[in-house]
Image (cartoon, rainbow, N blue to C red; front, side):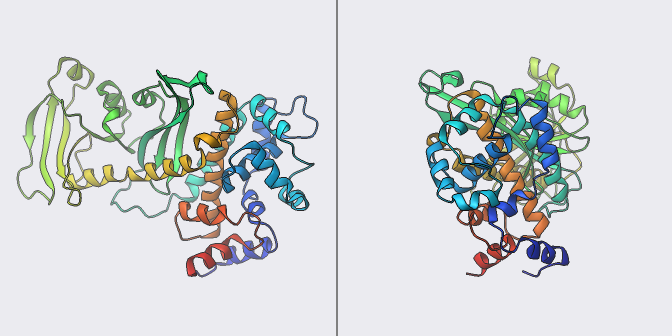
Length: 386
């Protein structure tokens, strides 16, 4: 990797500082303190501040700690380094547990929402393997299973508990543009009422999001969608592209819905694209309101949903059932939002330092080197050349 002038300056400034400390220098402390003040985070606080709580939980997420005791023992074993990492005072399990239970999780939710536009702005020029000028989003949810006897507030099914993390991911840069955390009972399609889509942007979704009234609301914003069709779709073809179809494209049709309720919910024509994936040989049928792009581009847009799956994979690796550090709704949501903030900080650091690998690769490298005193740039460079 070739160092730019900005990167060389950052490397010189960070020489001799721990990796975890280097990562946290990208935190806008003024904005963090505003979030704390907004929800009274420091009322009746003597020593263990919200910032110390954030440091503990971010460290736990970065290094994969499995319990509160694991967090505290690990950090206190490096007691001489804690001051340089930003900690003040010796840590205790009970103090951290109380903070996670009592301090409003919205402090960390709001802070994550401060970091989102910063990360998106830095990654807005990232390459996209599609010839699109518009912003491309992928919408999906992931279910985090919980033990019903321990998390009764998150009742999901007869013998299960769960929370869902609904995510609108900006495919350019793999940055979440919108996240909401609900109990497992909330249906995915309900989130379509809340997602922020700017005019002319495109969102791709699986067939769990087929709700024609909500899709029509997206159409009228106006924004575009590419969604996988359900098998029982009732429609009438009014036009078809029969000549010069690209490989894999089996049908490219303009249709109208014929079901009574669906036609009332979406009264305008839709585009139906039938496509056979050349690798899996699986036939997929898509619905979209975008008529100006090739049929293969419709399929390629849907294929980019894999980026949100990668994001969920990382989240689940860091939010395993046994790794939840508290059992209340507040503690669980605090942990989730700090994990998201850490992901965003890595995205911001990656772009600021000009690091070439994916965010997931960088996270793997940082995870095992939190106490190293190499610069992050040098650490990533050495790992890629080994």
